[in-house]
Image (tube, rainbow, N blue to C red; front, side, top):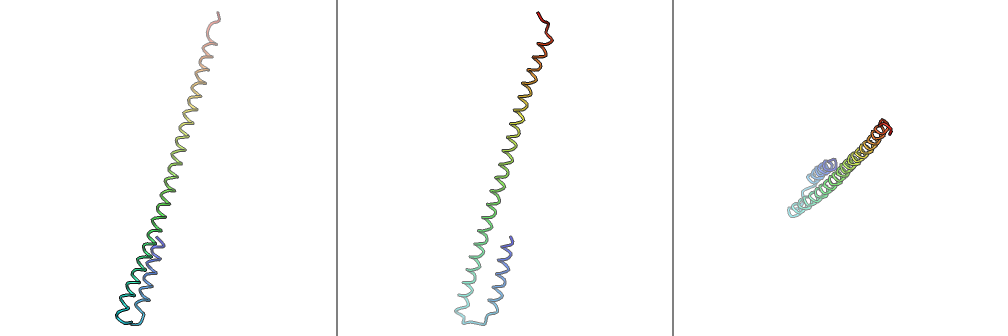
Length: 106
């Protein structure tokens, strides 16, 4: 956004400088104005292209960050499920051992 503002300000200064030039023959004034208009349009196009490129890069970084967060959440969920499963197995073994220990000996 700063570059857009800087381009607009530079355009205003260029316009002011163009307006202060001494009067030239009538044929060259439209040519200068057309050249100036083309230069301004080219600068604005270049600036907008840079802004779009920066926005795309920022969006890609945000998407990567979201993907990383999603991956981390999935890994955490899988780890939690694995730990829960191990705890359930251990509890089942402990219960089985307790049942065997309390069973009367024959």
